[in-house]
Amino acid sequence: MKTLKDLAIIKAFVPEKIPNFVGTESMFDFVVWNLYDRIANGLKSFDLLCDNRRFYDAFLVAGNVLETCAVLSYIKDKQTEKERLENLNKYLARSAAGQLIKTLSWSDDLSKEVVWKAYESGLKLFAPVGDSIIKKQKSDKTDKEIHWDILDKLKYRDGSNADKKSLIYSNYVRPDPQGYVRAFSKTFDRLDNGNFERMYDKYCDFKHVNIMSNGVAAETMEEDIVDWAIEIMAAVVLYLQRYGLKPMDD
Image (cartoon, rainbow, N blue to C red; front, side, top):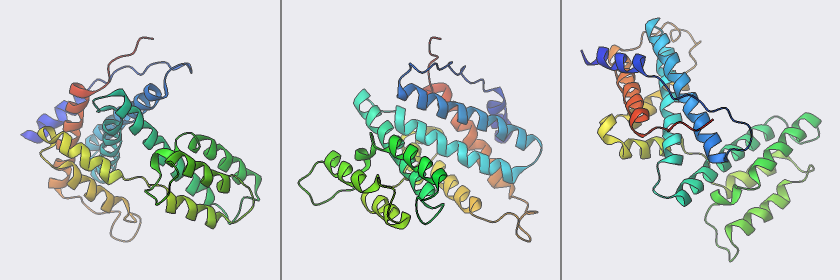
């Protein structure tokens, strides 16, 4: 039975040892290894949840594992170092922009010290890489110049948070998890049979359902969807084994 074979692949997976980072490593290595660690822990959780027949939770974990693995592939599976660093910067910039928007959503302004400190920290992460996700604009200025002009407006404590969020939304490309998964699905079609993107769409549907509402918490997930998730998690394991990270010297 294919499902049993796929479960055996997942159970047998032994992840690479995560390096002991001391602060001197490259940002690239730090990010990709942390993504790898999240995937490895997710696969372990998926296996345990399946063993305990918590299939709804297992499917949600599987969707997160697939999304994280797609991001890992987006960053590292490029032909040149230049392309890899460009995609790393885009990933960091989108993550930082998302964090800024979350922080700005906490209140109407930055008068509270805790909100201001969190916002300042987000700007420090966003400033060096934000030009990598500038939307196309009719301007003679470079993306970096446009980015710094926007930062000049974002860096002040006064003004409304709504205006600051509007600046970010209107000038920067937002994260596109579906895009990561779509590219991953096409790149590794020989492993996933084209199912990665379809499973991710189903995961997004489930993720946004209020599972505590009447009739949903006790829902029995269809057996074919569970088998589907198991098959794709096995494909993720095969991807990590074939195209994953090589151990770093301690």
